Length: 143
Length: 337
Image 1: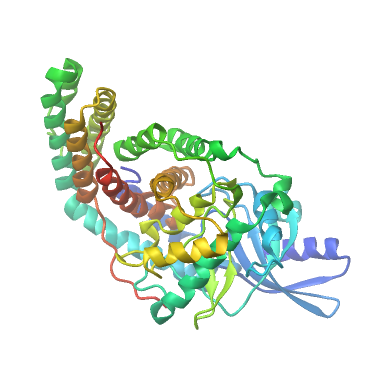
Image 2 (image 1 turned 90 degrees about the horizontal axis):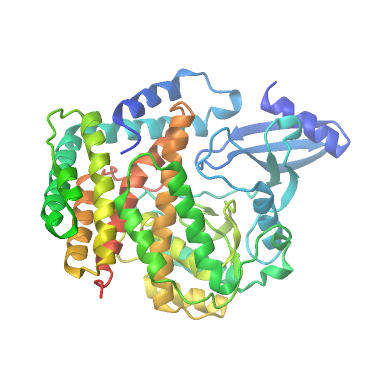
């Protein structure tokens, strides 16, 4: 998923590096600092949960593709091959991108076949995928 | 040359007298235009104004003439909309396209990510918020300045025009495959809504955070018309009720009102009846449109050298939150038959 944690933290640094023009100090800069702080906080969540979420998602998609191959084609079995040996976020995202493309293709095939049971299973998988990557904002009271 | 000097040069030329700009200050929030408040004194008269200038990189690619004419369409109509004063599509002294509008002081625009955004005034603000939206839907767009430039779709083509556009944005800007929003788009295409009951001005970004209130329960300015167009008025209602804009709220849409109450207020003001099946389409569409915007934000964040943290947050946190909403909506749909 984009942007990545290294990009976000580099961006936080770059956002504060240049002196702002006079008209962009005050409220604007205060808000900007607040957003960069929030990004740092969320990056900490991603560092803590991100690898586990990607490992789970990649494994779940591989299992679904493999299980669907007898009905929807061996190409899905081939797409399901492999394991996440490199568990860096970048490497797992590369594998995830390929797996997600195959998942999209599988879902289209399932819809075309009017396979209600597998369609429902895929939609339930989407719920879990989205939840696994969820980021939680801290409570922020209204001003 | 500083922005203040550029503004003074522009205003001196166009107003025909020496203009002195003071209190120039950028307003936080929003990534589609740079927004500044300033005062200008010309011939002993003080004007309080807002400058909206195109950024180098933007969350969304929009037509500033259309936004300018949208303000003109509703200024003086009884809705709290600021006056559009001047438009420079070539940028003139400011080097980038911009427009200037009147400033309404004494209010604040609340972030949709705060809890609770409107406190004890939520219901009062909600009544105005949905009533004003209904009034926008009730206006005949053919009689308004926005009709000078806006495309007028056929009632049966509103949904396709919007879906084609936002799917195109995802196709162009996506940097990581998104199976959830893709599945939602296919569902929308396979189950189109009925034709629009009426063609209306669609604000395009009518939501928590895009209006100002006075802190005592009165809505004083409807802002951010940069995505205005003509289309199905249910589009705006779906966007206003998008769960993204009521963070942490489960029983009040927009952090303001129970859903049924909001719909009833909108129906009374618009003179329309909400077809719940059609509205379900536009609600799912709203979540798809949101994800398209966050997809563009991520791309622009990279393209801009990672310097705009608002684009970063939009393209990352908000995109993740939108995926949760999309997946929940998709799971709640009927099974294939």
